[in-house]
Length: 403
Image 1: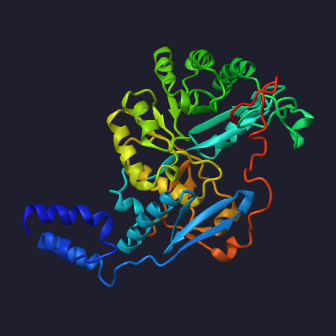
Image 2: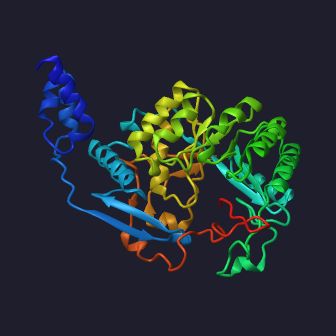
Image 3: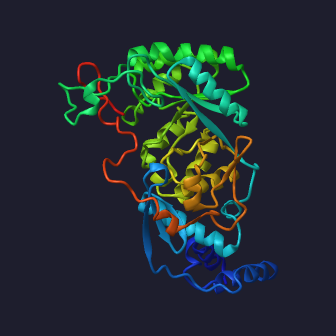
């Protein structure tokens, strides 16, 4: 076999060998390696995908759509689902946890951040202390803006129209104004740093609800409180504004949960305009592109903080955990606490120990979906989003704003 044939064979091995003959690859390996490879695949037959199944379930009233391909499940997007399913199948056939297939651990667990919120500073402080008592070293803090609706914390006021179907420009529902919010957030951090000390890492999500000028002023005001990161200060359609924001402030920036393609996140990474990439693995095509993003980010000093919201299944968390355990430039993992009902459906959820998300030492993702239990939690009728205020939040004058 010549060099060209060897390279061609190896290039196909990563994705095609599970579906066809492995003889040519074995021939290309050294005798010792060939023997080890033969032992690894002993007793396995070529894989043929015969069916793809969709499982709908809603433990804890969070709607989850799981795609099952020969026991390789994952969340939401079809392309991501198939991609991660194939990685899961490959790791199971190899008899190893997925993180081993991706290169092996560089850390024993993934640092998680705890979600703390409240209607006032004291409530946020108390919530943060509960997380710290559980061993979390990173805490995302969100507080309600007095008299307004908000994001990440229950608002203290909403009009009666918020409960009606006729919410619109002349009949606003939940009311939001950015100026009071921008004035309040630095005061919250001043309170928390004084009460919680310097050791805990504090994060905050703006959720894209401010103007460029307000984002600049907010970042400058937050500099004394040494945030771990400030998330989504601007919307994706204003990516160019990150250049101006970066020139004005040293606050670490996280961005990307709404991104879908490399055209959206590549400029921010290569120009070092953000510090953490927040794209959703299940929204960009799966683990294959996510591996490339992580490698690219390492060259530019950007760390990963993959989007892991409450409506992401344990499968999505397990997939990104496999990357986080193997990538040098990991930053932090969002969430990862799974209620009992969810654990009942998704057998083998990763565990949190002392603030770290730990992988199950089982082949593949380490999780199996119990379909009989999943059927006990049917998706309820009604609006598809678990947060019913999204889409109804407006300014005082009725102008619609992003959720």
